Image 1 (spheres, helix red, strand yellow):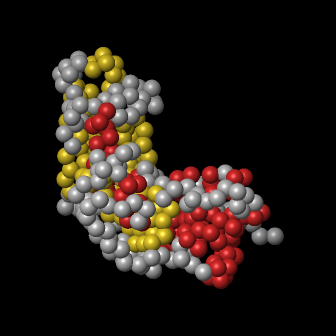
Image 2 (image 1 turned 90 degrees about the horizontal axis):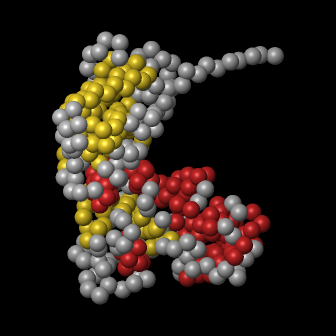
Length: 371
């Protein structure tokens, strides 16, 4: 049941809708598309809405892909002549070959999604709504679909995107709405909502974790939570050779992450993990002492532990952050002692390498031979 839901979306704006199962995401989209009617309140829409709310969009499994395209597009308000004119493009975009003229019941879920997305986006809508449909597709078609979505955004289409894929939310959306038990818990920038959502999931598996968020002057958002049975007293990024703290580093420079942890309660196991993310929140690298088989066991209250992680900074120029987590297993969803996203931010510069693009530097060389 939805209560006190109120928000507006501007033309060309992409808004993610996230929340745990039962939060009200699908119900909200059905109200927007008119599949359900609200018992109170109003929904105002300006422009044509195209939606993929369920895999197959109500396809008749006895009909072929081509026949279902005609039927679905007709329900969307398009004439047969309009659909016939677009049919070659729809067929080409779906890329399912001879299956396009075979019954839907012979399709895999990925093939159904290809046809559903192709017909739903054959004509650019003012509002495009997608509910988890792309999650069943192969990586190639997902990239192809996201490219079309980005083109629509540039042309003024508004996007409502429901997914459990937080990386997709960060990549596509300028804003994210977090639903919980039928109400809006947060409506903010992707980094703030995604980090809070992840902390909220961890909190549901633990006792109260005291979720705190603060945005630094440089724009990076710090999200911190945990039981503090063990906590990070200090965290520094240093030059591995000189041992001096550093904030601006060069491509290829050897770096050291040094941390000091204090144990406040007797612990059976303690695991430290680090993650490096780029400015958009995409994970560049991550590991923890669970996977390196360096789990500490039977720690006493008051004990101090020092951790050192040395690595070569084979990153591309740009801004990156270091996150840390103290847990008892390979994930913070069991016991989360202390976790902070974007604890340290650093800049990477290319001072002595050949020009390259991307988030990773490869020690690569062209070899050329002339006949």
